[in-house]
Length: 144
Image (cartoon, rainbow, N blue to C red; front, side, top):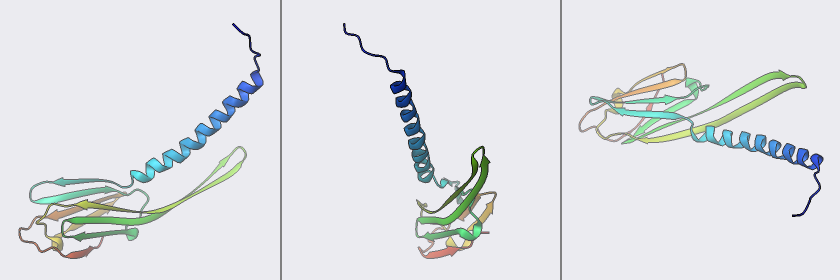
């Protein structure tokens, strides 16, 4: 058995480096996770209509675009967010901006001319009624 010198300075510096890397990588990966999950969308076929809910927090309805082409629904938009806060060492200003696009298959046989929309508190709701024999057309939908 051999003896080695114990150097507490080296261990302390090593631990600081590991902690700093963990913080930095944690921020990077949490941002990536948030980007991948945006926006959260639920599509439910309730018989007489298809109901779509999309969570769009921080996005204004003017920045949301909804299109329906045949059996493909596209929800896209963009937004930005600014945060200012004070810390013990000074002010921090964070800016975030970006855009998103989600394409979702919708069951065939929906009536694109009778789509109802509602946007409230960051939640977009689309109600797409069924209509047998509806022709696939591109229809721009105004968000209400």
